Image (cartoon, rainbow, N blue to C red; front, side, top):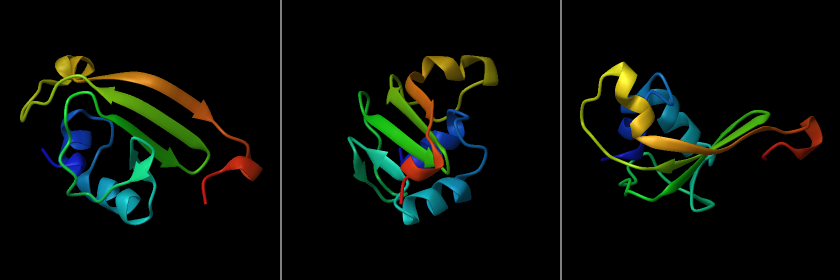
Length: 91
């Protein structure tokens, strides 16, 4: 499954176009390397999403096409969720 779709299905991001914009800006990383929105997610991947002054790092536990809202927590685990200071933000 494409990473932009995975982030939407897992409800980490609300919309696929947001994931695409993050990927184009180099703010969507897998194993600390920038990826395109078309990157195929695999179980075990560690995805880092950089939103302004917040870094969210999750590990992919499962990949499913359709998931109920209450079952999305089983798709990933949060490894790190940190706020960074303005001078430490991602460029």
